[in-house]
Length: 506
Image 1: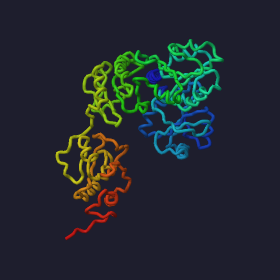
Image 2: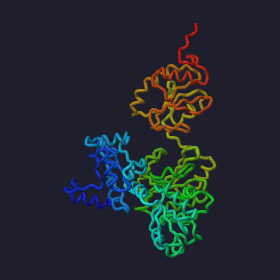
Image 3: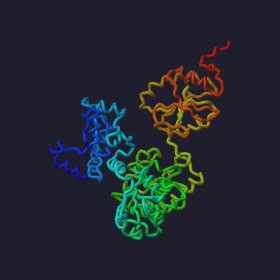
């Protein structure tokens, strides 16, 4: 669809300017008009609230347009709407009414009323899949086993299939409730054996299973078929259907993407290469099958494959970058243990090398990879400089109370804080039980249990509990002094508990 659109734009540039968009513009409507228009479109509508100058909005625009074209032809159709939050004709008021504070903001409406925030992907295919799962029944009903077989044979994703005698089956009720809860991320299908033509033997995916109603089967797509695990897994009722799906969805070696990366929990081993099941399925499975040889013996570890180009930023966190050879390059392998520590396989990929790497990981024989600047040659200033290599020494294993600032060199708030933080360091440089520390969190790994999502992030790390407490106080020198004086494990030499400076004894 997108290639044909590009071709049209290339050969008909003059017409492209006036081309009718499949995204519906409602920036000119007041509140009542917007509600009326959205209600008249279809039961389920996706609305983008945007600003023309917003860079994220500009990047989303072609993806949103492409998704609108595809979803327009979906059964049932899913209209995509946009509202310009800078428009004086109505858009400004609509965005205020719906609590829009950042751009782009996407919201799902049903029957003209706000239903929920859109929390799905921002690429065309991801939007299509997410929204297609929002409409109609959460599970696709089939009335013939032959039709179900045809559907499964063409599926490119995992499908969870229910086979029941009737809708009144207890398992059918649980299945449909699960399908409704998981409809955004999982495809479901079901069939009622008592009223359908054919039988379970007509479904190739059921070939090696004893499937009879009531039953639930997780069916993996043919592109993921391998000799190390079954392509279909029968639900055994010992756990919830949702738990069954979560445990079996990705198999021994899952395809980890930007949209499902949260599914892969530590400890995990990820192999990065030219993973592409659309343009290079044969090459993708060539390496995946070799990884499977190791993964089958380590079911306590999560294994995955990821596209090295799409995850170039993540590779950088391990000191790696996508190979220049592209499609012919062997996988690069990294791991994280249960504590979140990072490891890199330094040997060139082979089944034996991977097996040894995984064994050393489980035996805790690997040295963690820490992204780090070099330790400063002179670190005697009032504010100590932490880097990845000396973080444990200065912070985690310190016998002192530590105030640690995580900053970014480009951060305006950090630059404003810098001179104040230096003054705080000067005030406490002679305190034997307090250390003032800073670290560039863009150039060095932030170790657990510290979590940094913005800059500057400041933690108080007391020597007695070793439990970090996020500093939420003021940013003036006296604010820091008052906080440290009050919370210090041992009373300070230079300040009383209320932050007042002690008089020097003569």
